[in-house]
Image (cartoon, rainbow, N blue to C red):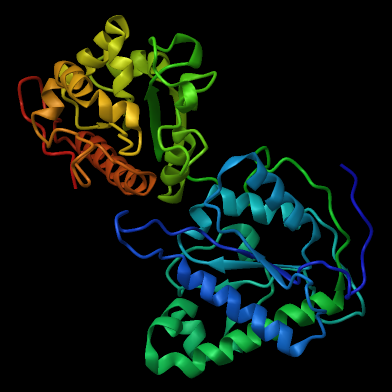
Length: 416
């Protein structure tokens, strides 16, 4: 796609793109959306910019993604906004610099040329960072560390605490309002003192992250035991499946992307380097030798237990009872077909996962947050974080000389 030329300040281009890391819910049922605080900041920035500029009615002021990174249309929308916005505003937090999606957003914006309207001592980049939380104890990636930007100019409380604390603590209310106004003025200043031509609308998913890659030693293997559409058992609804077994999407319509991608994003947000594969491609790693060479998370589709030949490898893995392999059985309580066949699927699971299920609650569509069997995409994200930590901790303990559970031993519960 071709790139466009620069436009005047009255053109309908958003002043800023707010780039932030989505915070998962503590639990899925009845919990407030933690990203509503970011949405409030976004609205306050838009209001402040409207007050200090002459943006015409109906023209975009900013852009904030609320879609949780789902689907091709979402990726195309992000790419368009990143190709046209005038200022990029990354919201710094430890989670932000672990997010691959945020790194791609930074990369796409930074590809665009920046021309200053008049020479100044400060080299403007079109990037205006904001502190969501204090980052004093965290090492910034190279691209962020190279920015010539002082957070102290927005006030000492802002620099020490970040916007989230200023919003949450009543005594900081005036400091929050002052910081938002100064941030809005900075966004407008950079937008008006630079010319950033419209960039190319590129494929978002194929872009690299601008952030430094994690240490190769922090690896987590994610394997998927499920179906391809063409190998489904009779009458199983194909809406949950794709061309590859790793395309399994058990939480449609709430999440229309493969669950393995969600799992990989969660592992990255925790600072790990994930790999994704079909369970059958991982059997040598999981079943060969004395124990796996690294931590693993196995995502199990209980419908796939209907294939007795393939299930035998999962049964063998379960009998090994290795703590460095965490098992999650995603279980969508809105999947009516699974509800109708729950007894049959539970019996299949009991026959294959006898060891691991003996140490935790049996998964059920009627259970609220049953350990290892998340019933919604929000519950899955929390369970995935716990599974990664269990597997990695067990793997590290083994390397420090503490053995894993052996055959016949009951491992600790994999529930919360």
